[in-house]
Image (cartoon, rainbow, N blue to C red):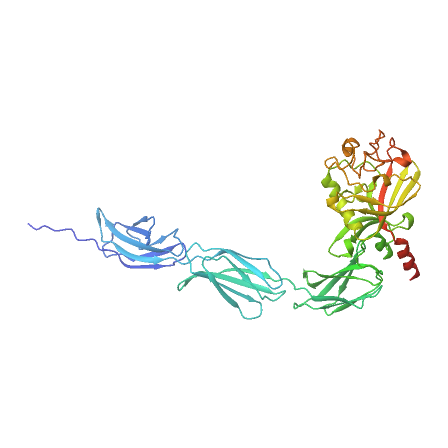
Length: 500
């Protein structure tokens, strides 16, 4: 008898791959002469991972391997099946392509720089290659490490359209490129300078930007004044400013135009001639500069431009030039406050306010000042003037010093001469009681007061209201009160100014 052993199933041959992308590949094989019932294709990452198996009809000779990971080598095995028998496996490997970086954008775009940002490739990569080019000119190429996801582009040309491509590389492999486009900003003109400054004229000059521009916008204004705006031709490099005000500070802004795009603004500040005091240290110097309207002004402590202070100037009372440091007129503001508040100052200078002990000390220590107190009540007016006034340093608790009295309100302030300041939480008076607490205010209290201008507004009970004892007594709260100072030698300065 003859025993016939089953013939061995032929193993699939001619294994190859086509259409390899970053996430898929097509696997091919040659069908054996004897058709198998089916094929089993298994693929698994070569360096470890989950295997996947596809079962295919025996008539097939290729299959798509989907959902692969970019930049990974896969081991692919195929066996032919016939009944319960299977062939020896055929095996080959394929490496998926690198995926491209995603979400490429340009941020922080200026006239010469831009920051490129992208999301990294899923594949492990050695680096990224960046190429960028303007519409005209050779491309620039740079490479960064594979763990970097940004690139600072510099030395760009202003107002220029750029195309950027970024692709990933690993050894000899490279991904497809991702692309973005952007246009750099218009660069600003430079070296904006003011010269030939007169009382009513000044000459502005500048150097043009590198970008091709269509014009300039020039604007200038004085503090609180209206903005004047001029459109200039792209060839302009200077402008004569006319019809300016004497002794006035002007701010100037210039920007270039390139179609709808505008450069950043460059600016300068200058002051027309005629200013006696460039950095007035008090309201009297502001007045001598020609500012004759009462209102808010910036003064400079000690004439130092690094120490500006906003104050209210009374430019009308007795010749003007007064820094107002206290005003009561409406009762809208609470004056029963602590030491910290009285040191720093508080309130609205256009209504009720206190300038602050610290500021009073700094101002009065810079020269000899006189004090004026203006009082009004139901149509009556009165004033008190003292030819000397100063507030000492903090370690003395801001002691007040006043000189000789004149006026119509009566001398209530001399009683407080030499006294430190008191608030309800800093009791520096000589009374048994806490004067600030008892009389709902704050002042240079003694035992306790003849003046209580920081008292409770409208309170006519004894000593608790806004009191000036020698005018309306202790049982009448005065409707309007201002305390103000100016240099003692103001009349001499004023006379010298008029003569000149």
